[in-house]
Length: 122
Image (tube, rainbow, N blue to C red; front, side, top):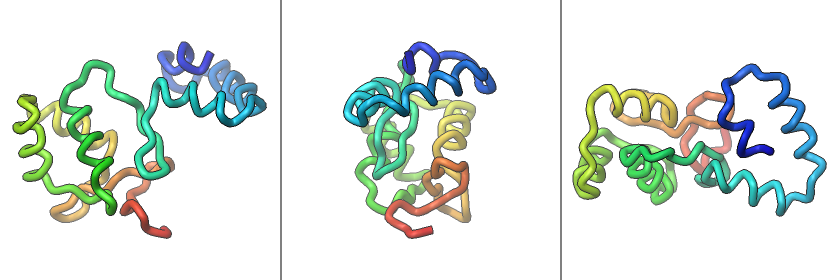
């Protein structure tokens, strides 16, 4: 149920109701379902790529970073190493979904939409 409703747009009250029902399930079952559509990155979940090679590169790179900070140069180098071409539009879209830009770094976006360094207590 969670997988099928994850494909609908935001604001659907049925999705909220379905999610509430899901909370009564045993935790391992809920985690198994969530793991089908999202990946755990240091305690926060992000949607898995749906055939988006650049997003896969960024998620893989992020999983390997203990502090969650990335620079554009290392992101582009990782994409090139994975033989993944990325347009400026795609780069901006994926990065703004997962990160918040502050100075010369991209910081992983926490669940509430605010930036946080992975491992921080903020």
